[in-house]
Amino acid sequence: MSLKVIEFNDHGICVSDETGILLHSPGFALADGAEVLFGEAAEQQARLRPTESYNRYWQELSLDPISHGNSFRHYADIAYAHLLHLAEVCAIQGEVIFAVPGSFTHQQLAILLGLAKQTPFTVIGVVDSSAAAAATQAKSAQVIYLDLQLHQALVSSLKLEAGVLQTETTVQVPGVGSQSFMNLMMQMATNLFIQQCRFNPQHNAESEQQLYNTLPHWLGASDDGNLILELATGETSHTAKMPHESLVSSLRPQYAKISDQVLAMQSNQDCQLMLSPAIAALPGFAASLPSSVRPVVLEREALTGNVLQFVNLIAGTGESIQLVNSLPVSEAPSPTSPPALGQGAPSHILFRHHALPVEDLPIENRLNPDRESDSAPALVLSIQGMPALLGHICLRDGEVSLKAEAAGMKINGSPAEAENRLRLGDEIQFEGCDDRASLIRVSHGQR
Image (cartoon, rainbow, N blue to C red; front, side):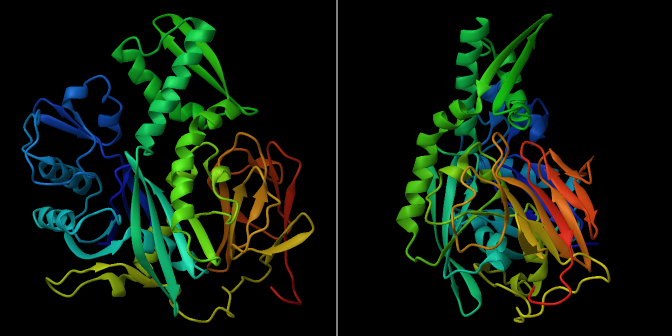
């Protein structure tokens, strides 16, 4: 029975193990008579039934009584029911490690561990989420890690010293969570529907919920810098166009609140800025950050991989479980020994006349790709209307692979899958630009 990792971020409670992410469950609950719905099922009905919906029970976890609680006495009751839901859906019965945000108080952590004792699984360790996510990518004296929750953003400052990365402080930035951005984008979409179609999608709960449920799909399918918005009511279809730049401009004042906190927290010129996939997915967010540091977008599996790598340092002994907020940046201190390549496998990727090593190479999309930075190497493109992270090239077990995080990439002219094995001579093309990247092998010289 494999060890499970549960990351507590109400934007999406993430359950994973050595095989990858098993479940992404947003922190929504809906009291449906005797039944309680959780995650996406609850989120997609929250605006239809607001008095029966809850989405603050993780951020405000406590034993304080709540009004209109239906069958729930307090938020801890809802959190416990959500834990049981995770255990049932993912068949969790063995050992588990919790990754918790720096915004959790000691009292909230104590409540969470108390609830977990009444579940089918056994918690063997607790680790700070920012340290767990950033550990093996940390290369600078200071690391600032940004993450997105439902109702706030988190800005964490970590210190790298003597090969150990430690979380020092986490600041909550209220009013800039994913729900705040959804509300802003919904209002902008509503105004466009009114202007272009004389249709108000928020005139009743049904069409408002439809707008909420559909908006993420529009954001992921933007075309030529524009979002095509389409809603159907009965037999009538309403279509509006949202310019991507107008969308980003409307969000910039909220982005500035996060950027201001980054600047206030930055205490070292040797500073590395890391983004969780959730916050990096906000339209135009990465390009809005201070130009002093180029952000590194972490992979979705980064936290889980680091927890499993350092499980012996995180796991407690017996009943003694302590919050671990520091981890080494590598398991074996031998940076001169890169991962072994299989015979005939590519060692570098040739892009714009530069050969970049394939060991750990993110493919990033930036509006200003030529800005210099001391951050880790990356294959940087500039494609209007695409997300900040397009994919990741990595070396595992002697094989080079491409993980595609966005549509539009091709390998030798054929559309890329979610995961692709790369071979010597392969060529990667990118929709929306003329750049191409070729897989090569450097037989002699420095890697």
